[in-house]
Amino acid sequence: MSLEEVLTSIRRAETRYGREPGSVDLVAVSKVQPLDRIEKALAAGHRRFGENRVQEAAGKWPDLRSRFPEVMLHLVGPLQTNKVKQAVELFDAIETIDREKLAEKISQELENSGRSIELYVQVNTGEEEQKAGVSPAEAGELVKFCRYDKNLPIVGLMAIPPANEPPAPHFALLRKLAEESGLEKLSMGMSGDYEEAISLGATSVRVGSAVFGARVSPDPR
Ligand SMILES: *Cc1c(COP(=O)(O)O)cnc(C)c1O
Image 1 (cartoon, rainbow, N blue to C red):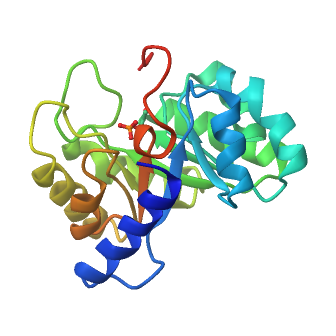
Image 2 (tube, rainbow, N blue to C red):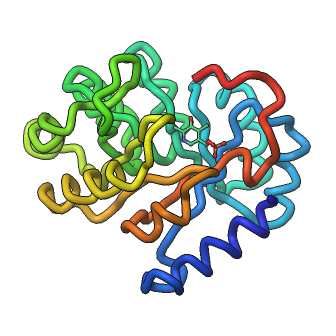
């Protein structure tokens, strides 16, 4: 696969599943990819990227962004409260709010910096011990806390389904939870299942290896 092929199959899936043309964004997940592959995607005109670690993103994106100011950078990995300040400076979207303490800290830093970024709540739809995300039962409460107690404009929900299960029920659950909270955006679907995610309402898909090729070093996730 390649960037162009992934974009083409996203557009095809939109048509096939009755989604509005252009309604699904591609977040090209560039974690641990060599710089030349990222440069290639930028040269091809792609501007929306995802990283799962603040430190790694801080190492490569400020320089790339100085050359491509329209880049939109999404944080798709877990965020520690002591990295929030840096994350708010670096990212245009944070997809991984999963607890009140983190929401509180993000709210403070947004106020201090005057920045406005896109915010998602991450839901652990498979209720996996080792995985980040709020439990499905608590998602609605966390969204309310963000909105009404912390004045954070949450736009949607994000999930990473369990690796060893069919993803469709998890996509469907995320969609139901978003509807219950009146949220428009759904970040779901990766290299292996993004077309299925589009069929179930994804508004953005996070695709890494299908865009850039296999990751060179082991995934630290
Ligand atoms: C790495 C990663 C992706 C992309 O994974 P691929 O299988 O390479 O497409 C998507 N979402 C998150 C949160 C990731 O960490």
